Length: 89
Image 1 (cartoon, rainbow, N blue to C red):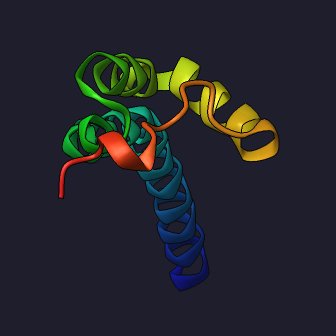
Image 2: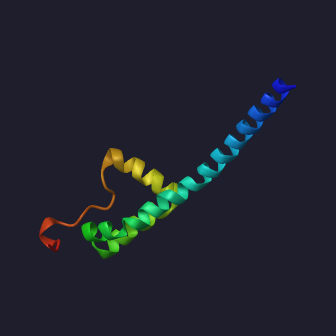
Image 3: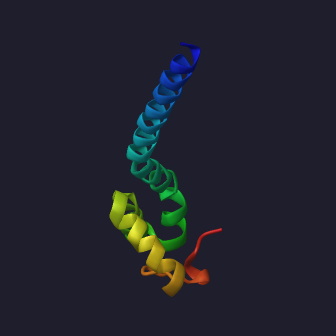
């Protein structure tokens, strides 16, 4: 009887783990959006207002931002930073 309870308990834990994994997987795109929103100020400072907002807007779109950042790892920025002279100190 105790062996049967152990199997049932193991099955419940396994099913609960899958449910938790599904919830975490659904929340991942929102985490990327939150990071993009948090870094809007840095983008505006480095790229300027319009270019910084465009860059952050693209990054905030869940799967589009992921693809953009993956390509930028290899090729560099799509939207370049401002020149050093025009940055405020």
